[in-house]
Image (cartoon, rainbow over all chains, first blue to last red; front, side):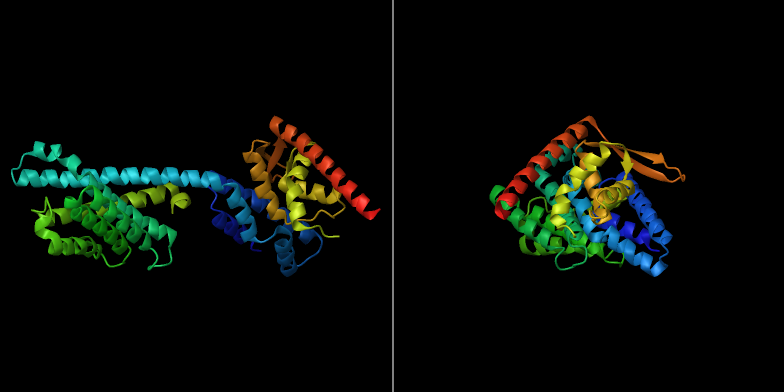
Length: 255
Length: 111
């Protein structure tokens, strides 16, 4: 008898928020199906007829799951918004810390004033935002279109165009570097899905190389392009760990 | 005569509230009781009862707890809260006045 399969299907499709609720609902449905099967069996039906009758009386798993999903839709949306906000905040903090640390190490190595680096860090707010937005949009694209490799980058591409317009309007002189950082972070995330290790390093490097080839001398703070790449690559690595942590913590809510 | 699905769906909350106003029950018991009282006429997909129960629970009309039955099986029992009792009375009155109006129209149409 495939009672467990019916229950698992309902719970999987319904995407009920919260692990306890999922466990409780599956237990409740399983008990009902067992009672139903017992009743049908007591009427003398064999296994084949029993399966058919149980399916007929209980209803289609997808329909029940759809009804469950609509009951919990507002709660699920609220949790998703909260978790996404936590994810973006954690990602931004990680990016600021990683790039800040890389800059500090570089300052120490080149005997530059650390105080001046820290004082000027607020000027890189567009860069931090761009890295976070690039990575998070690529990840969101994966979640929205888990099976389509062509549709997944669409979200990043759309956001990239919007950011280009905003940065071009707000900081036209300094727009190239944040946009290159955005593209690097998005490409880094997309290539992190490739099985070959370290191939995503190319993802973070390629947009930077293109930006350097096109606008190199015009970009402010471009004295150490390899350092920018190191900062971006380590940021992408840190962001990948944050994604893994969130997926582990929120299991089906987030994944 | 099988009833229209939408009609059943619209009245399921009222039936749950009414049955639970008498005593606490678990899902399968609610189905059995509604079949018994309607002499097997009120037949709907049993799985759809649970989203309806969860909806009423979320609205604060029901409380629930796991209890061990006679055969040692754990079952989730539902009962009415104070808000649920009010909702049950309100829904019943609403239904009665609605059917009264519909019946009045139907009887005039048949006359």
